[in-house]
Image (cartoon, rainbow, N blue to C red; front, side, top):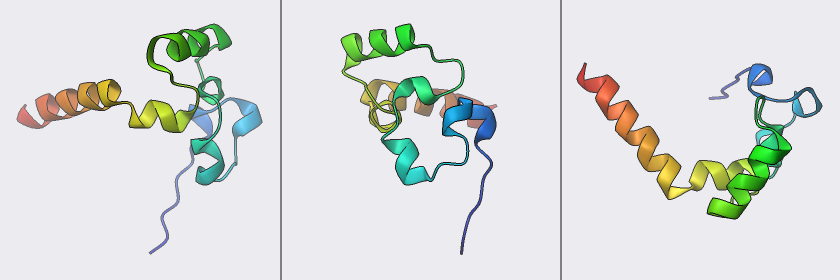
Length: 74
């Protein structure tokens, strides 16, 4: 079963319409609202360079899980 999603509002214009496989390897600054300076700080603090790195980071995943569990408990 094919799944489609419009991610354009989450991305900078230059990355709109790209395949998920391309987005995973795109720089973190490809996300709307993430500046090059933000991306540099993420790289220094957590060695995060790509959207995939951000999504796989254990600290960000733990924080997201805590929020999800809290929301499910409400």
